[in-house]
Every structure is written in C-alpha cells, then in structure tokens.
Length: 351
Image (cartoon, rainbow, N blue to C red; front, side):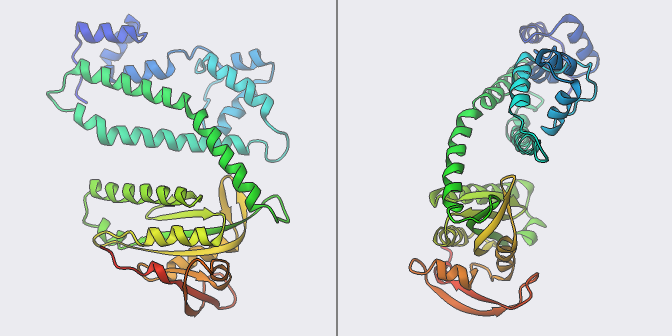
C-alpha cells in the first residue's frame, strides 16, 4: 500500500486503538501506519514476559518457553513483553494439563500447527478478497484502516469462539473412536475405510489457467469434499495438492464418499479414487499403515472417473454397491498382486 498521508481523522482513530504519540510518530516515519490497527489489536495487551508468566504460575521459565515453542510460537527473548493476562491463564491451564512422558508435547504441537494453518488461511483469504479492493488509489485511507481494524477484531472474536466448535468435534471424535476401536487389539489402531480422490488433468490445466481460476477450482473441490464426507459421517483428513484423503467408519460409507466425489467433473478435470478398509495406525489426527498405502496406490492406478478397491474392501461393502472385477494388479510397496475391483456406480457421465 502507498504511504499513508497523516490526517487528523486517521490519527484520532489510531489513538482510540491505543496508539501513543510516540508510536504514531515512529510508524509515520517508517511508513507503516497502515499496519498499526492489526498490531494494536493483536498485541495491545501484551505486557508480560515469559519470566512474568513463570513467576505467576510458579514454574521455571524454560517450561513456559518450551510450552509456547511446542505451540509453534517463537519466544526469542524471555525478557520481551509479548504475553497478555489471557496468555497467562492459558499457560497455567496448559502446564497443569500437560501429561508426563515421551508424548507430553504432542497435543500442543498438533494444536499449534492446526491453528497456524487457520491463521495462514485467514490472512490469505483477506489478501485475496478484501485487501485488493481497498488498496486502490482512490480508496479512502481512513475507511481502509477502519475496515482492517474491524476485520482483525472479527478474526480475534472468531478465535475466541473456537471452543464452541471444538466441543462438537470432540464429541464426534469420541463417537468415531468408540466405533473404530470396538475390536481393536491396540490403542493406536482404528478400523476404518480410507480413501483418496485426486483430480486427473489438474496439472496440465495449472500450466495455463489463471491463479484465480485455480483457486476457484481447488476451493470448489475442497468444499464439495467436506460436504460429502460430512453427509456420510466421514472426515476429511487432509488435502495434498489436488488430492483429498478421507476416512469413514465402514467400507460402504467410504465407497459412497468416493463415488460422489468422482462423479463431480468439470471441463478438463476428471476425478479418480481408491478405497481400502482395515486396521490403520492413528497419530495426530492422521492415519498410517498398509491400508492407507493401498488406498493411495489404488487411486493412482484408477482411470479417470473410476474408484478402485481391493477384494476385502469390496466384500465389506457388498450389498450396498456393485463391483466389477478389475484383475490382479502389482501395487507398489506390496509383495504380491492385489485382487482389484472397480466400483460400478462411479462410472457415470458428467453432465
């Protein structure tokens, strides 16, 4: 953004956010007045150091710094004021909640990395949608800064409300765990259907399509994947470029998700998928093991608009879906050829 010209209205508004005359003078000299609303809203109450938090809670400063670093937050100087009273309350809770042992930091690493992704997505969404409209030469500077302050405040409020969403996800996770581990031999094993669906034709399209068109395509695919997975009580585990990984509680639900996603086509893009059902290892909300590898390899072997399954998965999903034998395939990572079946109903024409 071009250097903001100091105006009485702009200065007055920034003072309402807590800006001092010294801070305003420094920001004006450094041509960063446009950044002040975000900085003031996000760090205006940050008056405590890591040492202050440690003293309040009654633990060592290394424990406080270690906790925040596990959350992905850099604490470059334990004497730098960067924490608020709310941070102190959270730190006290986290220190007392933190389990002992080898995996004591796992939950906090997952929490930090997940929220970092949310933050990155929020910033990208703002930059790609709101900011370009406000960055025009004729844009009113004061209106732009107020819009930025409002957006930042709303983002903070959204973050404060995440506990409400977490309660629902926690309830769903407990329900899935009870079903998926009903006959589990080990606490780390879940019995699930794992599926992969990718977009054939995306890479050639990306060579000549505009960034906005690609974002629209990926955004539509992601939205559809979440919608379909939720409708069948499944969960989207992650997106890997133009590919989505999902899990479901049984083979039939996994087939249904893959079927609906491979039936969604657009010009030049044709999805394909693979599904496998069995015991998987769970860690940090992700899944590992031969069943996962098999589902991924089957998706790679499928032709456009086809879903491939192994024999055990087809047998588990029989009665709900029809399957056609697709031969025995040599699958990378597996010693013997795998008996493969094609999900009949996935082979439909795009309208």
